[in-house]
Image (cartoon, rainbow, N blue to C red; front, side, top):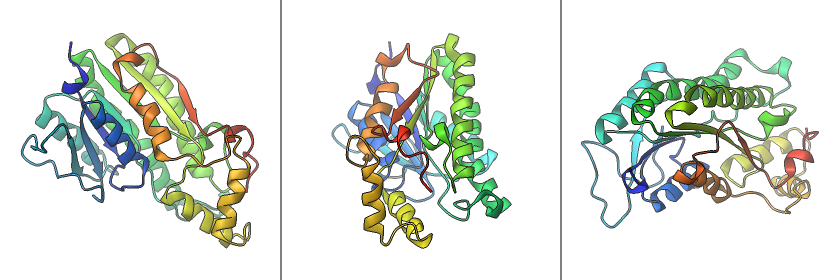
Length: 273
């Protein structure tokens, strides 16, 4: 049987060092995967994937491949490139999201183009990437599809209609796919993070200040913590450890599931504006 030392993982939205994607890459590399990060930017210090395996020395096997997953052509080419260079694809982690923008408004104020961007990156791209990856996984009779959704997709949030809808759609899509591919040794699961102390948290805090909901970013961050039963923000490693399990051999009987990584905040903060 192929072990993790011979497995290949592809993680989208993994180009920033403080994000979930970079933490996921680090966990998978630590388990022996050849892990390929993709994003529009490469700030994580991984060497670019060019003409085959990169000799990184030691056991480090993380590589970067620049790609725009906003188009069907980009998604198909990305998967084909990884499979062409490595000969397989065992784990696909759909982590990329659209940047905050005019979608964080009351629904009747959200521009159509902002709605479309969030849906394109948050729901359409995972569909396209899974569509491209499943044939290879089916041929291998092995695969792990891990979609990073959100607690917002489980509840809905004011001023997050597009984001919440895209994540709710991703949860439902994951369940459907899990039912289709299970007989081929492929699992499909969602991870649903709550408040995470990343760059996105600071932009959300700034938006709350702009709305007059907080006097400062520090106050906005502190207010969020009061709603979290475990008493702290999550960090990328909290999510990455769950993804690591779902990507492993041990998770072969785990599929069509939603893994909440929110410190209990899902049940206390859904009325936040």
